[in-house]
Each structure stands twice: as C-alpha cells, then as structure tokens.
Length: 400
Image (tube, rainbow, N blue to C red; front, side, top):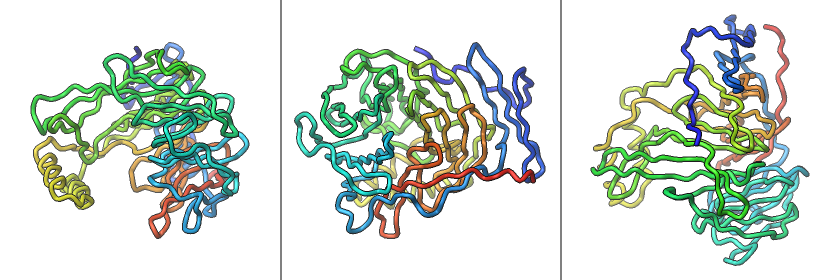
C-alpha cells in the first residue's frame, strides 16, 4: 500500500530542474510555478497565482433547484451529492433521502429514481450518489452499506453489499473510476484515557463491482480526535482527509497542508500540486470562541455539558486548517477554498498550475466543476438550501 504524502515537501528556496512559469501580476510581484519530475510524478510548486482573479462566476444562475413551492426539490436533509450527467441533466441526493431527484439543465424536474423501501431499486436512507463509467449512476447507503447501480434513465441494474476490508471499519464510497469503486475505510487506535487524543487511521481502496474483492491503493494520514468513553469527538479546527473522484482522476488531500495528490483511476500517482502558504496560527481566544459557538448549537443540556468538559480537558488546536474544501473537474483540474467563510476559491488547472482565483456568489459552495460551469449549493434568506448551476467565464489578462 502506498503512503499518501510520501514525496517530501520542498524547501522554500530549493532550485529544481524543470519548467518554471513566471507571470507578472497586478501588485507588481512575480508569481512562479515550478514543475519538476520525480520518478514519473510531476511535482508542481505554486508560489502564487498566474492571475489574481482568473475567472468570474455569473451572479444569476443558469438553473436554480429548490425554494418554497418546489415539491420535487424539497429534501429531508442537507444536500450531500449533486452532479451533472453527460446530457446536461442535474442529479441531486440529500442525506437520508429515499430518492435521487433528476432535473434538466434549466432546473426543471424530470423524474425521481428509487423510492422508500429495502428492495432492489429502493432506499432506506441515502448517503451519496455518483456518476459511473458509461454514464450509469451509483448510489450508496452508509447505514447498511448497500450500493446500487442504475442506468442513465434510472432503471435498476444491481444491488451490492459493500464489505469492509480486514481490520477496517465504516467503508464509504467516494466515486467510481476505471479501477472500480473508490472507497475510504477507517481504523481506530483507541486511547486508554478519556479526553486524550485517539488516532484514526484511514486508507483508500478500490472495490470490484461485486463489493467484496478489494485492492488497497494508499494509506491516508492519521487524524486525531478526542477520545471519550469509547467514542471520538471532533475539536474546532481539526484537520481531515478529503477524497474526490472525477472522471478517471482521484484527488487526495489532508486539510492540514495545501497539497493535493492526483492519481489516475487505478491509483497511480501522477501529480502532486502544492500552494506555498504557511499554516495560520490561531489568534488569542479564537479556539474558545469556536468552542462556545459549537456548544450554543446544542439543545440538549447534558450533551452540551459533556462536550464542554471534553473540549476543556483535551489538547487544543493551535493552527487553522490550510484549506476547507475541494471541488473537482473530470479533466483533472480542481478548485480549493482556504477558509470556511471565504468567497474566494483558488482554481488549479489540469496541469497543476494555479491559474488564479474566482469569487463565489454569496452563500454558494461548489460541489462539482466542469468546462464553463460550476454546480453547488446555495442557502436563501429562509435557510432553505438550493442547488444552483452557474456559468464560469475566464477573465481576460489585460497585462497590468
């Protein structure tokens, strides 16, 4: 099994043989991208963007799914998956839903796939849905580890029960590539003392479509969580692993550092993309304010008191995550955003170069990007979540 992050981080002033791209930006300072080869793997170091703002997103969406008086777009939980079919249709899944909702490219409802139930083609509680090869659709129910495959028009094909690999728990499908079902699984290393930190190991696997046979692809960096009475809780500013599958590309990253590894569909590392940005040290009182905000959202007094005790006794995080989210394109490019509240996303092209940034519409979070468009969620003034499709256009370089 390959270990994620096995290629060492380069020092800030290392000179390497390879390709160096330099662009003059509006602030007068040069921005460089340096590329070198390491045993057939491209290492891309981005010191800054080629353009400060490289793309603009239309404020008026091409499609707006959701809102009041939209019965086919009312979902029982948060939207967990949204993606486009090759015909331009938009497929939406909400957490614990019992259907996959299908809309056309303008947001008009077309049909639902599935219904409540435990039989073939039925759902007890969805987690996610993904596009698969040949434009088929794969759904995954995490509570019973059921995976189902449908044709593009929604006809049921097969039902699979996903079995965790030996010594791992909680398999979760992340997408489908040419190598099979790409899934993560976790392995706990418990702590003997409450309020200490437990290590949670993780790995990426490729499952065959029967859900039984699996090949280990790579080990993920362990994450730390508070250990309390045989379970784990997250702290404010904890880091974690992100896995995205888009087309025949697998993107793997840990939010503790702004580095993304790009694999092909069979788990072969092709590219490591880094953005030079130091970890941000938390300001005085910032961690405690985040704790207080978390506790304010809990209505159960006993749970609130238990979590306060855990936060007060466990070690505190001293730095913020390097980034908070990643949305991928099937061509190998991707977007990242560096803070939870920011509207600024950094756009990385399919060669790993930091093209520049884009400004998101207020309240919008990307889920999938494609050529000239971005699909994501947007929350309106009533707190209702919509799925929106926006046009994305490059900003002309005026040479300033």
